[in-house]
Every structure is written in structure tokens, then in C-alpha cells.
Image (tube, rainbow, N blue to C red; front, side):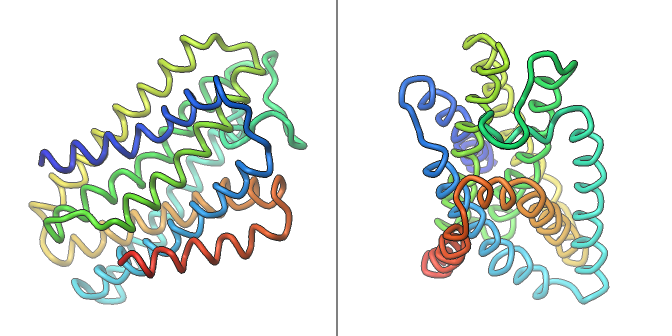
Length: 245
């Protein structure tokens, strides 16, 4: 349990680290896009090699389909709601075709809710992995860290351009860190008590939610800011995950 809490906090701290870095170091849009593409590939690799692979060992196609498609559908539904409120800007730094605007009512809150929503399946993977194998893979924590770091950078830049005070922005990321920690703990606690069939559904559910998240938020933003080269960088992220297994 202690491992789930610790590594969940580490995953959430990547967002906070990105926020702190961008307050002191100017990052180019292209660099942020490249890191985001690398994180996208790493997450896809972990989902494919770890979560779905483990689910196939524990359950059948029925459990995997229920979990994977259900996770993707539920995330998509919540993402649509949050996006209409302004949460679609959570990966954006304010220089793209859609810029966070301080006059948009509830945009800051929607960005925060959307970021927490992104963090939940990622951090739950940590708890799931520890409960299933007793140890945490290097590939898993690397993938989550690489995906959360550029999100902290992009979202913080966008929030600052929208008029949010530094203290308030940092407080939001601390809340995300707490949410990540609790999500990892819940993932560990729930799976630790579940049957093999239920474990397959839960693992697949997290996998589906993550794939829906990277496809709807990370990949479009990376391509818009980084150009066609992000396709190669994403492939590199998947390959790095394979090497780290």
C-alpha cells in the first residue's frame, strides 16, 4: 500500500514540477509538443504491453471488451462534458488555434477538472500494477511521468495567460497530486480484493480510458504544435517502453 501511495504521488508531482519549471524557464511550443508525443507513445506502449497483456492472462475476450470499451466510452462522455465548459484547453498553452480566455466562465475550473480526470486512470494504473505484480515497472512510471510533465507546462502557461495567480495555479496542481495519490491507492485496494475476472475488467477499463485520453487530448495537441515529426517521436515512445519492460 505504501508503494501505491508513494508512486501515485510521484506521478502527480510531474504535473506540479511542470508548473514550477514553466514559471522560471521559458519552453518553446515545439519542445512541449515533442515531450507530449514521447509521453503519448510511452502510455500507448504501457497500455498495450502491460495492462492489456495482463488482462488477457487473467480473463477472456468478454471481460476485456467490457472493460476496455467501457473505459473509453465513459472517459469520452466525461471529456465531452468538460470540454464544453472549457476543459479542452487543459493541454494548451495559449498559443494554438484555441486559446484559454479569462472571460470564458468556468474555464479555469474546467481545466482543473479535466486534468484530474486525465490523472485518475493514469494513477490507477500504478496501483493496479503494484497489486498485480508487487513491484512497479520502470516503463509504467516513465510513461506516466512523461505524459504529466508537458501537461503541467502547457496548462500552467495557459492558466497564467488567462489571469490566474501563481499561488492559485500551484494550489490546483497540489490538488491534482493528491488526487493522483488517492487514485493509485484506490486502484491498489480495489484490485487487491478482486477476482481474476474482475482484475481483467479493471485493467482493461483503465487501458480504455487512457487510450481515449491520449487520442482526444495529447495527440492532437502534439501534432498541432510539433508537426509531422511527432509521429516518429510517438513511435519512439512506444519502443522505449518495450525496452524498459
